[in-house]
Length: 400
Ligand code: HSE
Image (cartoon, rainbow, N blue to C red; front, side):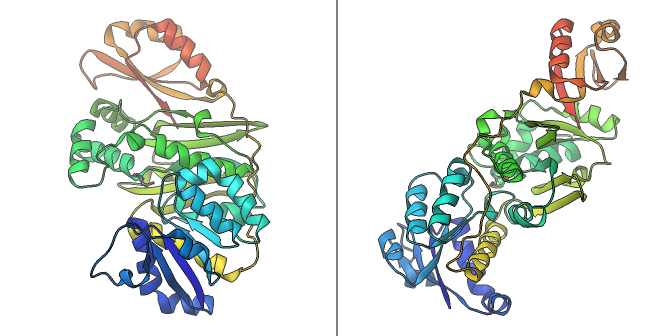
């Protein structure tokens, strides 16, 4: 019997409790051992909930109990999750977490502490909710050079963009409806401004290359400027618009960006709709692999935490290594990234387009008083200079 504790009985923590209980026999069958939740830490009481029997309010009860081999940190936020995690690892207890903020900020340090104490720090649930993505990067693709990672890593924004596309609605209308239904947070900034996706691609890129990627180094644009008119253009192109979180290795340079992209049906991520997430990874030997599923939600995320619990339970007293050095991965300025750009300008300026942007694919008659075009490939710096020279660009969306 392997005894575990859960820190935080919120959405994910209560999900972990449920997964362990409901899938008790499945887990025992696969593991050859039972998992038992010995403690749940939370400041609140849960009268009438069976969790009350194992509920504690003092973390020391858990940290001082040698029987507890694995701790699930499902509190979220940096503090006190950081202190609790550190102390658990220092006492030789493996920690499995869904806390992307903590992983992004302190991942390398916590992995090294785990290594020094013959235990593990695992975080499958921190990116892509229930989608297995950390483990494939750590194990299945360990022999590969990763050439690119492209992710739809935020369910809220993918839901909003999907509704804008299918129902022809404006961003604000869809956001308000999503908030009413509880699909979007009351304060949706982290999602709609791309910050959540940015933290997640920072983690995935760090794992792909074994060095630390700071999310502040990644150019991040959200979806707040995307309009129903943009979708009308995209439709004309036979494409859609997705918020991509992307990192690319080109020679010895690394680029990363979070931004809306025009996406054609040839890209498998085109088909990812609603709250679903997906990650497309291109490797130098095996080519493309894609990972798809629920990027959030109680049981999906909890299931990923429990997958880590099983991994730790199979390796009690051993460290499951994740190569993630504290040394920073230099992300090159986005200026050097090469791609095509979809640009909208006033109709009156159409005659000047070719002089400045060269050969383009034109789109007219989509909206009154304006036209749109897709450029040939150029660097971001070249685009910026041309757009500045043109002077009257209404909007730009990158083309995948
Ligand atoms: N707010 C996130 C999303 C879920 O919408 O995908 C948690 O990472």
